[in-house]
Image (cartoon, rainbow, N blue to C red):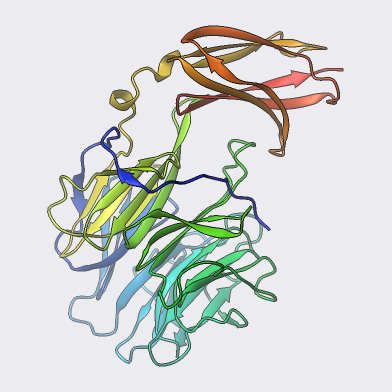
Length: 426
């Protein structure tokens, strides 16, 4: 069972203390879009006649559409993990059957390798670690949808059964064998490649089809951020899964078309998470970190209704109804939290034996929590959990039962987090 961060959530509100950088048009404004997806360093905008690819590093768009061709609709694109210049696309043909193509020249020419009886391909994803695998799912109102896996970068596909879904809207993959599938009115989860499935419906409302799902895996850059974020949306709103209680928490009372998150590390010690949601009433909502009690409407500057959202290292991207992809750099860090630079944490001596002094500075008077974690993410000590006045403070720490090794000391105060790696030498 995966670990998720426990949040105690009240009724969410729309707040006004957060901001993001302005939206700017980057292209694809001349075609009706089905949506956008990110893979590797590229952004893909899908249409009824093919797709466009956008290289976020060069700012160049490539046109892979076939104007006037029937049956070339695309809904999902992923880059290959084994072969250079491999691209895999999923869509639907003129007979309303799902299609899977692969290309060895990044989409200039494509080869059809699978035709599904289970309707159009709604989503594709590849494993993040270890053995590369690509997964695809389909949706149909008439026959059961299909969940498919390719172990050869999209050249051949095998059917996965036992998940119980009739229609699948989205999927997420954390490893070669760990997959989340959303469809109908629930989510299923497997950790063994589909041999066994866990139904994660729990307290989700009955008879409410799931529109979209978002899964954010552990952040390998920070050993103590080892939780998985899992969110879904249906007609009643946006829900977050608390694995400790095995319950879904309503975090936004608005139904969503699309959800996105990104992890941002500003410098060695400062980081945050950005959460975005595109609602069915045509707004883009944003919250900083995982503060789901406070959302900000950041739709201003978009000239048409948003239909899809993606987030990555290059920023946040929104596809609009009628065409056009807009980009924002995301959270407006300098203007939003000008006092962040005076939050600091360090330990001396470091390495140490048997004790060290934790010196920390907080920007405003308030609660400060300092904890130590091992490099597997397990909490080993709470050094302080108290109220402090604004300014510098010190706290001595002498671990009694810890062995030699590296540990991460983390300070949380005023909604911000900083950290330092320390070494205990016995």
